[in-house]
Length: 173
Image (tube, rainbow, N blue to C red; front, side, top):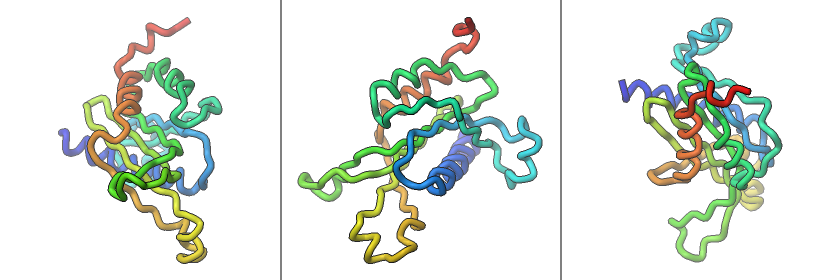
């Protein structure tokens, strides 16, 4: 089952990447709940066999990416049991350490996702520089190069997982 769950998270993550990419750069953070596709019958025909469906959380306040306010907001979410996982997309400043100690911070998107069953995935999409845009022409924005790895933004993963572990009835007012 873990392999199937990881595949479901991978597929949901790619759908989130496509969704955010279509929105363009300079966007506010976006939060997605991941629910079993069977819970959304009208979406089943469009899901092409996807186990999980993205549900955009429209009520997200305008919070700065990586800010203490965003972390605080995430720490106050308790997801209902029907939500199998969560993905957060946010724009960040990223220093590619593979380019050496002198590497300058670059703009990037950080996609972090977790499932209740324990799977997690974090990907980084670097924003093309002005020089790369000029050299590649008008289609440079269409290329999506993702990088991932262990221990990328572990604090974000912890914050997202925390919301899945909380009892939503404990917060009812």
